[in-house]
Structure formats: structure tokens, C-alpha cells
Amino acid sequence: MMEQRINAFEKGQAAMKSLYGIGGYLNKSIVEQSIFHLIYFRVSQINGCAYCLDMHSKDLRAAGETEQRLYGLSAWRETPYFSERECAALAWAEAVTTLKDQVSDEVYYYVRKQFSEEELVDLTLAVTTINTYNRINIAFRVIPGGYQPGQYK
Image (cartoon, rainbow, N blue to C red):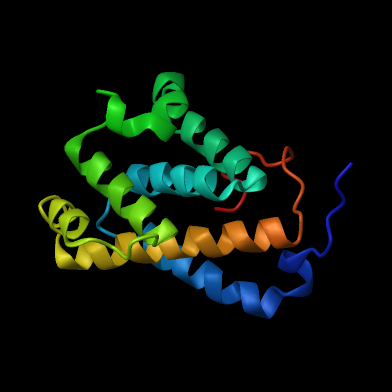
């Protein structure tokens, strides 16, 4: 059985406070919260963060997200379930998370058709923030399963 290494949220309260500030800012963003939650889940799939997958799947379901869309999220390009704006956000989230070939002009211009410059900054901040949480949770082996929807509001 996996054991948690460090409770960063307890032992690193000062450091974590900065992430909470970003979350507070993003909660007031003009970008739809539903889009943020989709990208949090998708980025957590890419990174293999069990804690965040547990958390965001529960939050998405509590907000009315369908099982069909959750199960199809890793193959979003091959499904008709997501709007153009959601697809653009998912493309951006994947590009910014993997950085395998930088972030291509093709992806950038595709996303810019759906998001203003201000929205794209917020979207990028959301992607980098969930990547940070994923890495903290994976590094310190935070145990999934106990999260309740809305627990960190």
C-alpha cells in the first residue's frame, strides 16, 4: 500500500497559500468555471495524478457533468460531446502540459478563435496551476479517495 510522504498542505502552508491565491483569482475569471474543471481533469489524466482525478471527477459530477463526457474526455477529439470552446481549451491544456513540440502556432491560432487574450492568460494560468498541484500530489503521494465535492471552496 502506498503511504503519503509529506502533507504539503499542512507542512507547507505558507507555500501553498500562494496557490490558493491563484485559485481565488481563477474563481473570478471570465472563463467559464466548467471549462476550468474540464481542463483540470484532463491535465490530471495526462499527468496520472490519482488524487486530482478523484477530486475533479467528483466536482464535475456534482456540477452536473455527464458520465459520457467524463469517460470520453481522454478521446475528446474523436467525440461530438464537447463545444468548440471546450475543444480549444482542451487543446491548449494538452499543449501547455506536454510541451513536446513547444506550443504550436496552429494550436495557438485555433485557441485564439475561441478565447480573448485575457481569457487565454487565465486559461494558461489554470493549466500551469493544475500541473503544479499534480506534481505536488504525485511527489508526496497524496492518497486519493477521501475528497468530498466542494471541500476546498
